[in-house]
Image 1 (cartoon, helix red, strand yellow):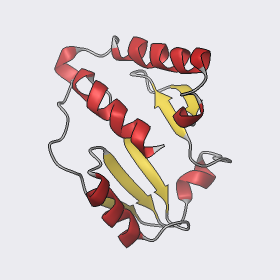
Image 2 (tube, helix red, strand yellow; image 1 turned 30 degrees about the vertical axis):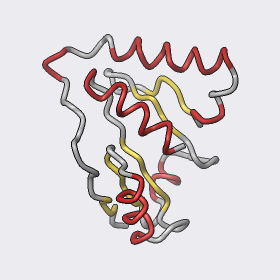
Image 3 (cartoon, rainbow, N blue to C red; image 1 turned 90 degrees about the vertical axis):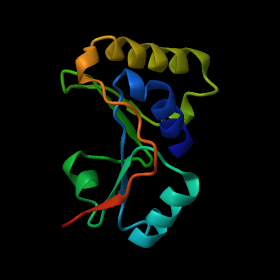
Amino acid sequence: MREHLVRWHRKYAARGLVIVEINQGLQEPLELQRRSVVRQRVPQLVLWDEANQNTRNYGVRAWPIAFLIGPDGKVKWEGNPARTIHRTDPHRQLVDLLESNLKQIRLDQVRGPRSSAPPVLQIAP
């Protein structure tokens, strides 16, 4: 799924999309995540959730999962974008939803894309 997030970041960050990737600490060690982010030149913020708090707090049952949260703070979509890529209608609906939510963001709220890979930040238990 990471390649979809990177692609979205590159395409939409200048229009206001902010991507935060959260990885399960119980699945992959912190150092492995750090090396992966550097090697893959990941432009978005990556959080490492040591105790999988987010999985429990938000009722995540499948992995990987992405949430599209609108400018109003409400979840507009959840799922794995990789599973929509070869399915024309679901993929088009996801892209349309993404683009329509980006239209709601004022230009003075937009931050440009990062020029270098961000650190992997640890979420303490």
